[in-house]
Length: 396
Ligand SMILES: CC(C)(COP(=O)(O)OP(=O)(O)OC[C@H]1O[C@@H](n2cnc3c(N)ncnc32)[C@H](O)[C@@H]1OP(=O)(O)O)[C@@H](O)C(=O)NCCC(=O)NCCS
Image 1 (cartoon, helix red, strand yellow):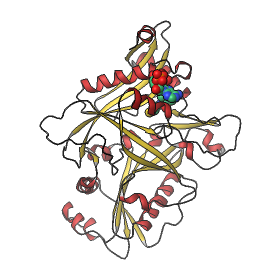
Image 2 (cartoon, protein in one colour):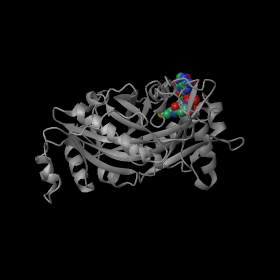
Image 3 (tube, rainbow, N blue to C red):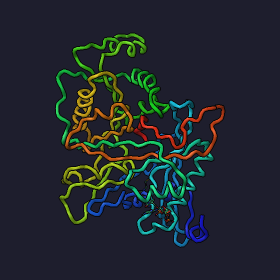
Image 4 (cartoon, rainbow, N blue to C red):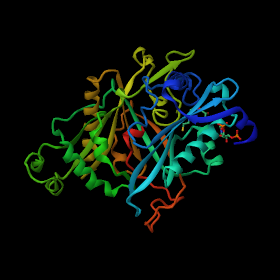
């Protein structure tokens, strides 16, 4: 910490009894990004830890002014285990998320101090790499992590955003969408994840979370997928698939947190800007007017675990988005369907190109902080850009 900032700010662990209200307030007043006409705020619905609670090893740090105890910044961190296609099957990834500094206290070095402190915590808890995601246009965050903290970009992704009120047209009569049992879904994912550059080692925990609504497969009715219904072993599901099929899961983010859009002076302008990460990175691009309903806090369904095989994926992908839109109609406060795919994910070219669909470029950054014991191969070669990753709904 530079001398002057150290004298002004103390970084300490979040204390629920003492900080819950103030942190909620700080998060609500920290706009994401820099659009002058529309500001996006997150509302953690009274639980600032909601993004990291899913991980057993997590922390939230706050920055407090020494002079008056005012809370002016916050950052969250958690550790998750991932497998990789590059060799190591078990990498401890320290994730940094939810970094916020109060607008009045920016450019004083507080963001940097929060990042250094959370990195220290993650390293102390055994992280091999530290990681963060940020929307491409977030200059402040990109500069902070690359110039000041030596992070490198290791993958680029695209976030797809579709208003639930403008569904992708046509749930084809020729296509069947069928819900899997959880053990079938786990088996299929564990089998198919091996083709991903990076994937979670605990997909069972993701699918058993209460926000996970289910996993479905989509295929053409003309071909039957008999092994799905018989009491056969799960291995038979994989060996006897239809010629084209896709699978996906849905996460109901509406239950955990909401987004809130506030407009300044131009009430019915379209969104053009892009903002920053994840929930921090989404909504600016919605290319539809800020209607009355979006001025109240709203939530979204997150389509994840998209995987497909065969020649006719275009139609199957369309059916998936359509299905998700229909599902959204019955979910309270749900206004948007979102998904995110790595740039070299084979499914990316099959995402429906509707005019109502928006795209946001997202970048993932990484830094190596510890050696991986008993593993000769580097799981992620620094500087090598990967592009087919599993996007974990818990982090979004
Ligand atoms: C990103 C954010 C946390 C930075 O906090 P901060 O306390 O202002 O950052 P610092 O003062 O520690 O800045 C450290 C470095 O980051 C970079 N940086 C910070 N703000 C910047 C800006 N507005 N423009 C360009 N670079 C910026 C600079 O390299 C800066 O070093 P310098 O001041 O010596 O040039 C803050 O702008 C914020 O809360 N933004 C809204 C939420 C958000 O986007 N979070 C990031 C999600 S990943």
